[in-house]
Image (cartoon, rainbow, N blue to C red; front, side, top):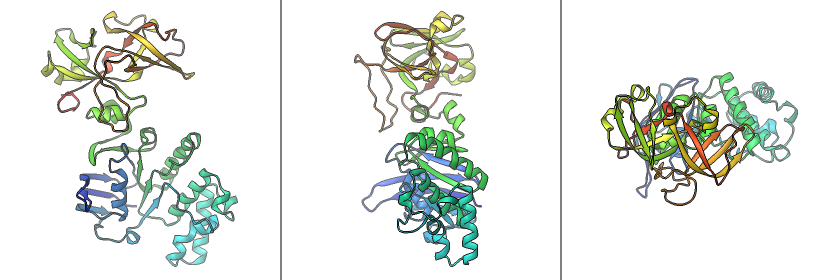
Length: 390
């Protein structure tokens, strides 16, 4: 096993496009680190530089104790799992899994031992004589994993390996891959655009935007303490609700103005975000997670000053919860995610989403009283877009 270190790594293409900017990242020994971001953010480019499939324009790349900037891909002791599996259609599952070992002139009996052991782990033993075309998508993905496992590499690199699978199979396979990685203890760098994949699989998650690293942390810390507006909106589904707001500080704590309505801050707000004292009377970006909205009818002890009234525009009943879309008369703050569908506010559509109890009786087209868990609000500087904490 090995640590993978990127130290101020840059990638500039011949046409002058700067794809990766001073990326510094350490994937620790046996760690499962997920690199996530919107389309075109540079995550696959970063992975390909680790693999040696893209040259490095600046900085240093290390795998274990060795600098690998100029080392050929075949000599980097890594195994890659691709989006399209890259299986040989004319070969059996057995031969696909063992092909790299055959090229490396590993003895036949050792190849057989490694292939059969990998097939047993991946529940492929009964399929070893089949061709890839006779397998399901999930089985082909397991074959690609088996080919990586038998090489016993220092690190796994996975480039969106589940994107070709249907939704149900993706859920199953992400659990299997995460479990397998933990059993094998192989250092793994996993690239995806799916933040749910990132949150459920990674020991840590690194968020990339426009080639710049935004934040690296555990999934829960990314969710609870995002460093900026982009991370706050990108991590979480549905996305965080973001509004232009004005904050006022007083002895009791303070209030935030959302359009024509005011919300009392919870007493602990200033203790959790002491930096808010520097924003008294100023505009900020206010963030509210969907789960921090609720039908006020179910919050009988909720302070009246921590509720909003808003017209409901759409209900999505999901069984365990209702996604309630409603309208607040405050401008939205754009997250900066190029893949997001965002509005600047001011039209008749919804600009807020809340997770309500499935027992809620709110109705589309009617006003709803919405309770807000103001102790969980997020605050950002509108100019720097950084979170306000200390």
